Amino acid sequence: MSPPPAPNHGSLQAAVASLLDRHMKTGRVLTECPISTADGVKAADVAWASPDCMRDLGSRLCFPKSPEICVEVLSPSNSDAEIQEKMARYFDAGAQEVWCCGEFGAMSFFGPEIAAPMRASRLCPRFPKEIKLR
Image (tube, rainbow, N blue to C red; front, side, top):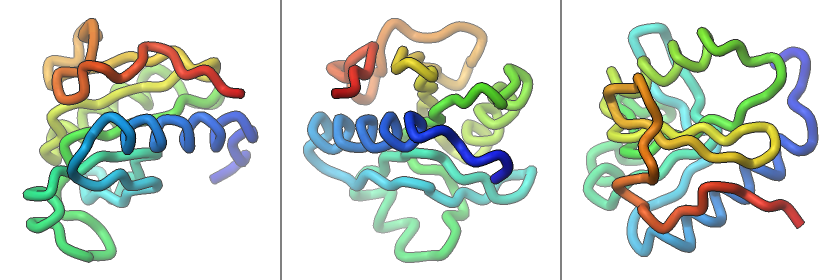
């Protein structure tokens, strides 16, 4: 990746992963999750896969379909068009929700319709709407 993400990017990625792990009692939280899409392999910053999804996906190097939740931590270099395209690819690959974490921790939750964010995640309704770093 060029240029590399700011340190805050990794901190937000870790916080999202930790919160997902805390709120989702089953399944697996993955970081830098490689997903095969119609536009090549995309790596979700964070993803969550149910036990059933993990059984289907196994221990492959690249998942042939998307886990249920894919999360992108946004960087200043990300364009709106780039993120919209990435979200569409995750949904095409089978994601049920795609979340975006803004540079300062604001969360947006999207369903397959993408047009407007949902008020909260349907799969993890208690997930906070803002990530606060210590």
